[in-house]
Image 1 (cartoon, helix red, strand yellow):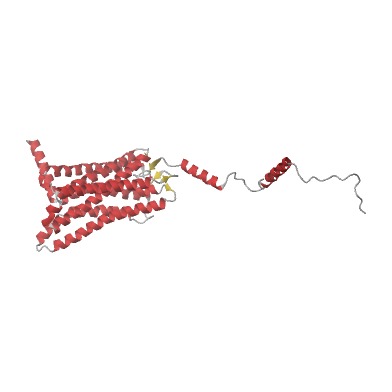
Image 2 (cartoon, helix red, strand yellow):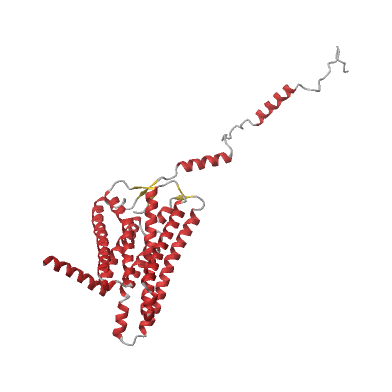
Length: 369
């Protein structure tokens, strides 16, 4: 039987103290947020971790590059490569300067075709100067680093003079088309003012292309590896070092712009020669056909060499060649093609060849007298 407790009943308090309530809430919160055993406490939210990783990525941003180039070749071969490329470089400069000087001195060569040839020689010289000296220096140096600004400058100039070269080849094809297919209108269509405008447009177009592509490429972020597996700041080798979501789209855009511009020039050159061949076939005599076509041989040969070596480099199957063979193949376009240009124009262009011979004959005659 239950008994009532002795003594007076104590009344229960139903209005707790505010300070006691706050302390109980604080202890309850601490117990709820206590890390569970066996689970690693990161100490940061996912957003904070992402920000930290981005900060670390920015800290590792590349400020200079290393040109691998010929680094993997046997050291005993590098002096031989240096001597070979140096001789080709000097011959390229002297050959193109000889062509420019001959055209300047011979008044019989002051025609649109040789004006374009003179502009082409200038673009060859500048393209070679933009790439080859750095390659020659790296062949004998142990320091292959290149600053960010120097790499961007080299890419800009190589793009500018490379595109200008292609545009000038296209204009030279148009000149041959007008001379053969519309001979009576040649002096009107190819006046000195019009020729100067065409050459100016070629240089302006090359400069715009070079500036646009260089700004697009160097707008990217380069992080991680700083090794460029090329002897120059080549755009495709450099894009492999870029990081970020837009890298793939920029790469495709650069390739599309380059291919569209170069293939567009080649298409117009081919179209010009389609009309030229059709006009030549209408000439009744074989001698007339041969004489007319001989004025196009040097230009056509340069076009085949220029686009042939470019296709050999950029259209080769991926993964089928070693890095050393890729390096040697790249020199065919940057060193060997400019080396061949003055040889082809001097030997295949009879008028220019005779003018060079006359210049040497006058020079030696004045020295002997």
